[in-house]
Image (cartoon, rainbow, N blue to C red):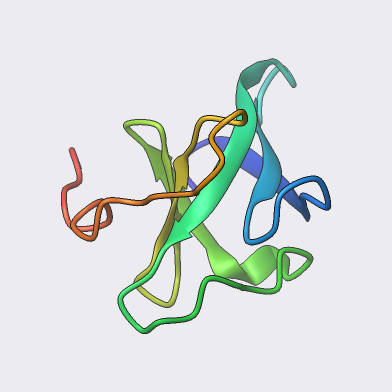
Amino acid sequence: MGGVYIKCDKNFDKKETYKCEIYNNRNGEILSEGIYAVGYGNGNPFFDSKDKQIYESYDLGRIFLRDGRCLVSVTPSASVVEVDADACFTRSF
């Protein structure tokens, strides 16, 4: 997974979001943490966050899932969660 460990849990404070932390596999340093939402092309804003095999990679502030979707950082204070429909299509690798 590119040298990172990803941990996400459902965010019960805001529906359809996840509290995620991305760690460096080598030293345990937190590379990123925050509130994320699924950029979904199939209409499903949920995934099994406990399934460690669902995570593919972390790049440019996004968490890519093996099913082609990704998680993007969202503003925790926003009243409506909006995710750009193209958020999962651009990668740097």
